[in-house]
Length: 302
Ligand code: UTP
Image (cartoon, rainbow, N blue to C red; front, side, top):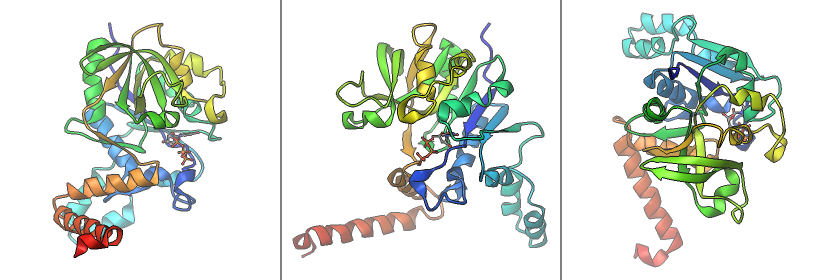
């Protein structure tokens, strides 16, 4: 009998150096896309996929994440006093059910694999999801929900994948592909950040995973990989060929919000979709683009 997927890990222990100085005193996962922090999008996606227990792997300087999902008596009282019912409801919705959230500390940022391993005792012997909040996926059906539907059919390990330009393979975990069927691709192997000339494909893993607990036995080895960090990809690679392991070409658009350009693209995309500010942002974007054309090609302005 396949065990149902009930738990998710949110590794939020990273240092976010690509976003300094913004992330000096604020967690990267609290950066907002329009009006919601990245971590809230990830939590909402997990809820939509039926996840019941959310495990956050935090580190020093990450307490704003815990506060975001907790009571804020002063703010709530003030909103009540001022009859701001919509805002109050929005804040109330953030609160987890008692026991739904758990926090574990990663004392040192030793890599994503290490962060996931820190949650091993809370996960126990059951399948679990991992969501990286800095990978934001805009999709009709939330990405993890799509993956759960696939997982319920094929079981094993399922990771979300997308094609990337060949020149960029050294930024991602890359799949060695086996048989393909529709959106599913068998993972014959995985390599972390291969140089383009040795990359086995251009199919990159994004920050959504459904994994079996066997991965913890490989993470136990604590072997450093690319960049001297303990890589989740290396542990997953050891599971390829030992059971079912699939890449799933998700439907939707992924924004790499750990990177400045990707984060700004996400803000524009979500703002354009926003019912209140979408029109204004559209006009502004068109105006900026027109100004750029005038600067780059003055003759086009005439
Ligand atoms: P990144 O590779 O983006 O690393 O982590 P980072 O440290 O957050 O950011 P940069 O590269 O210095 O700018 C991907 C995800 O894994 C988590 C991060 O919080 C992020 O959600 N992570 C990474 C950890 O939880 N612990 C780690 O040791 C490393």
